[in-house]
Length: 90
Image (tube, rainbow, N blue to C red; front, side, top):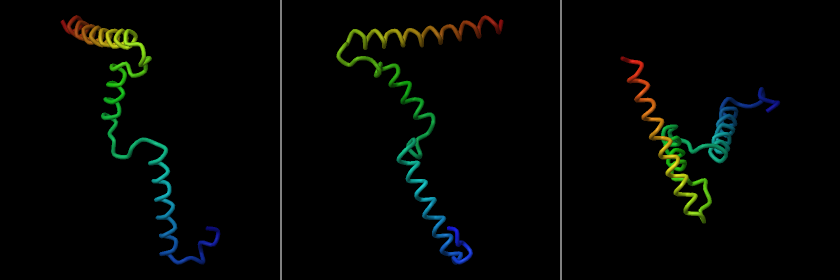
């Protein structure tokens, strides 16, 4: 585009639109899904975390142990927060 002064406004607009479409296609291919909310991504990550998706699929003991441990940790954290709020708001 070194010779922008020789192009018509419509040609420049078409070139900018084509470049914008290429950028959008690249972002769509490389990155997150467009339109998927941050809340939905976080919920999916939490679901995968508590389902122990990162453990060895061939070892059911490890999978269930991880699920139980993560669930117990979440319950403990919730109870701790409730207790702290109750304790410090008296």
